[in-house]
Length: 275
Ligand SMILES: *[C@@H]1O[C@H](CO)[C@@H](O)[C@H](O)[C@H]1NC(C)=O
Ligand SMILES: *[C@@H]1O[C@H](CO)[C@@H](O)[C@H](O)[C@H]1NC(C)=O
Figure 1 (cartoon, rainbow, N blue to C red):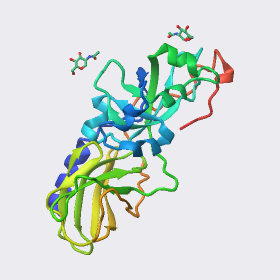
Figure 2 (figure 1 turned 45 degrees about the vertical axis):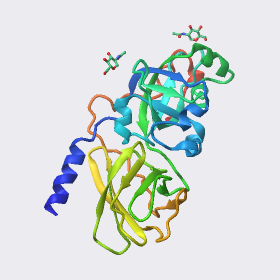
Figure 3 (figure 1 turned 90 degrees about the vertical axis):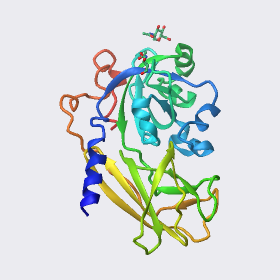
Figure 4 (figure 1 turned 180 degrees about the vertical axis):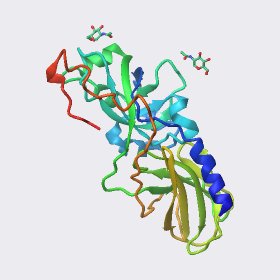
């Protein structure tokens, strides 16, 4: 128990605060639609099922060595001639190594920042000033899912990918055990959203996840996720849903009113609270 508390404390103190504050940066877009589905998070073609193809590569401070994979952001561009004040909601699927812009978006997400009829204009600009903040991911009908990766090899090696991680959370640790057993073995983040272990328990498998959101963290248990005859390429429902929203002690950012700044000049741009 003491060890558990101690390790949880370390996880929590490394969680970055104030993700949901408004940040100023720039965003560009990928010309090739395939660029993001081959992204560093390892979602592959499953990426296209996240956020309706509104995907983003994020700089390393947001990618967080893969802990940022699957995080959701609301981004809007600031050129009031071409941009709506609602912006777009994206999911992180890749790392952006060029830190001149915090994000490189799929063209679909980039165009979604434009106001009606301005899609081509925003593409012509190429790079735009944006403001963004982290928002909870919403998967209304989907639990957290575990996909068994192709590199897995019975009986000794298991690699899994996490999908549909809701809320405003990070998964910072995963343990695996045979269903019904308390003999837990830790997994390691291999890259992006992929975790692995070369000490695979036999039989059906359960998992427990350490999920942090802001300063809060907790274990989430998922029982009987993989059947004893788990198969490569199959996506298994964890039976649990993650919806936690970060409670952050951010001073001086809570009064950032998304969507209000342009209103004086152009009342038609008035956005309802889109949070
Ligand atoms: C805003 O968009 C218009 C129309 O495309 C463009 O002419 C103008 O240069 C843009 N402004 C900035 C600051 O990028
Ligand atoms: C990008 O990051 C590198 C390495 O951290 C740094 O040396 C460089 O100055 C950064 N460039 C910009 C434009 O911030």
